[in-house]
Length: 250
Ligand SMILES: [Zn+2]
Image 1: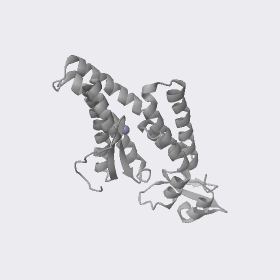
Image 2: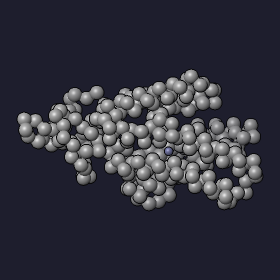
Image 3: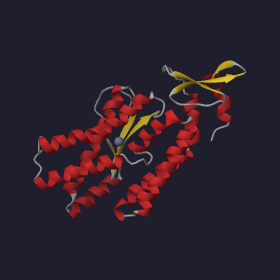
Image 4: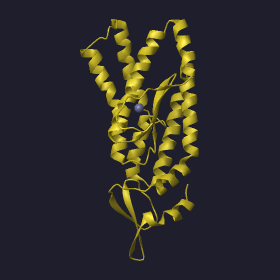
């Protein structure tokens, strides 16, 4: 899918149906639907900003325990745009909070409203966790790109991700977090394996956005800058010698 504005139907993962049946049988269906609605509003918040910046949106994938907006070429857009896109999902929880607290009850009982408010807070905080590919981790990575060279920033971010993952899902293990732990563990391993490929893609990407120059004595790539290598008193545009750098990746 690659259109500018428009409604996106989420792609529902087949595993969700097993959850729906289990929720129906156990009488938790209403609560499950409330939680999933909040998750989907969060994703549509991301999607709205992504559409505004003309990102190539692949789909919104609805999983039994959450949802993800999948964007083609994430990491190739200007940093501020990716930053806004990530915030787009997080700010929806502030709107939902005020909406439920001071606005409409949507026909929800007092208990259901209270549950929605608690879930809203939980989803917000959970998404802030710096575990790849959660919003918290992606936001941290964007900040790290300003401080460190591309490969180092990615490495630090994934290392933080690993430590937080261990603390949240292994040290404080809970059975009800098992499925999300397996999924995030899988996504983390995938990101770790693909970091070299991601770096090469970043190097090969033709950048048309104006960036500030940054001068280096060595061949280094800082994502937010136009990198210039100073050698023997001469300036060399790092873009022109990307191929050299591809050989010496992670
Ligand atoms: Zn999000």
